[in-house]
Amino acid sequence: MSEIPETIKRWTAKRRVALVLELLRGETTAAQAARKYSLTVAEIQGWKEAFLSGAENALRSRPRDDEAMRVVEINKLKQKVGELVMERDVLTEAMKSHPFARRLLDK
Image (cartoon, rainbow, N blue to C red):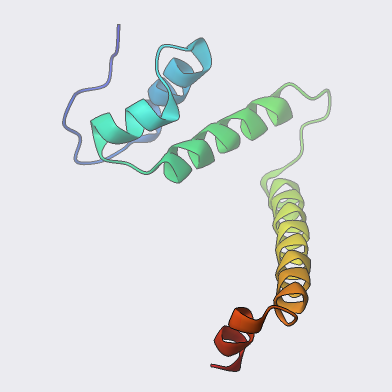
């Protein structure tokens, strides 16, 4: 079933691909793999996202080069940071009217 050894000192690209393929085939979940291999779910999800992004680019009729891929990823991350900052600002503003939250904000 799994071609990944139980104990791993170094996660090579080949091993990461094998794990992502197991996830995609439904043989395991990110949470199960994280427990089994002492990884974080976020780390595994990052590998999966990178894998799928690379696969999408490979199947394009005109694949992007590495720099273009980085620019796309940077723009996605900037957008996410902007969303999180806006969410934080809304929550901070909402907390100002709560009596207990004011104490937290004053610290």
